[in-house]
Image (cartoon, rainbow, N blue to C red; front, side, top):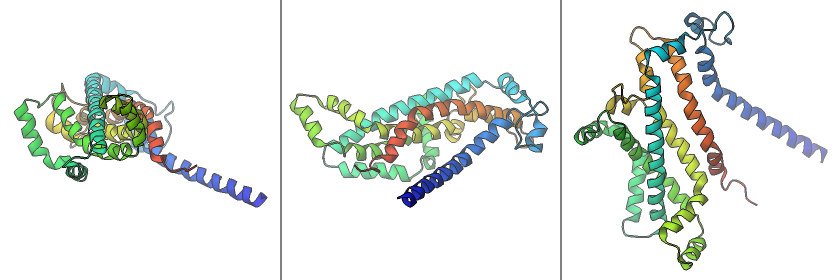
Length: 280
C-alpha cells in the first residue's frame, strides 16, 4: 500500500510538472510582449528577456499609441464586431442545431453535410465574391459587413457541435415538456442550459479568431472610422521602419478584453472538453 501511494503521488507530481511546463510555455510569448512594452527601444533588442528596471523602463510606446492612434475607436469597433457576431452566432447556431437534432425531415442529412463542408473550406477563399457582395449591399467600411462575414464564418462549426450535444439530451425530458403543453420555443429554452458547456467552448473558439482577424477588416472595412484593434496596430509597422514600442504597447492593451472574455467562457469550455471523460 505504501508503494502504491508513493507511486500515485509521484505520478501526480509528474503530471503537475508537465502541466506547469506547458502553461509556462504558453504564457511565455505574452510575458515577452508585456515586459518589452515597458522598455526603451534599444533594450527591446539589447535585453529582451530582462525585467524592466530603472534603467530600461519607458512608457514611450504607450504614449505614442495614445497620441498617434485612435485606440478608443479601434477598441470600440473590435468589441462591437466581436460581441455582436458572437451573440448572433450562438443564437442562430443554437436554433439551427436544435432543429437539425430534433426534427427528421427530407434534406436533414444534406444540410448537416453542407454545414460540415463549411467547416473544411476556409471562408477566405471567397474573399473576392464577399467583397463584391458587400459592395453591392453598400456595406463596405461598415461594421455590419464584418459582423455578417463573421456570422457566416462561425455558424457551420457552431451548428455542427451543438447539434451533436443537443442530440444527447434525453428525449424523455422533451416529451414530458410537450405533454405538459410547452411550446417548441419553451422546449428550446429548456435544452439550452443543458448544452451550456458547448456554448462556452464555441464562444472561445469563435471569439479569438474574430478579435485577432486582420484579413477581413483590411479588405472590407479599412477606413479609420471602422478599423479594428488588429488593423490599427498596423500603422506602426512599416516596410523600412517599425515603431516596436508602439506595436508591443498596442498588443498588450489589445490582449486585455480577449483575456477577460476568455475567462468568462473558460469554465464552460473546460466542462465541455471533460464531458464524458469521467464515468461514475
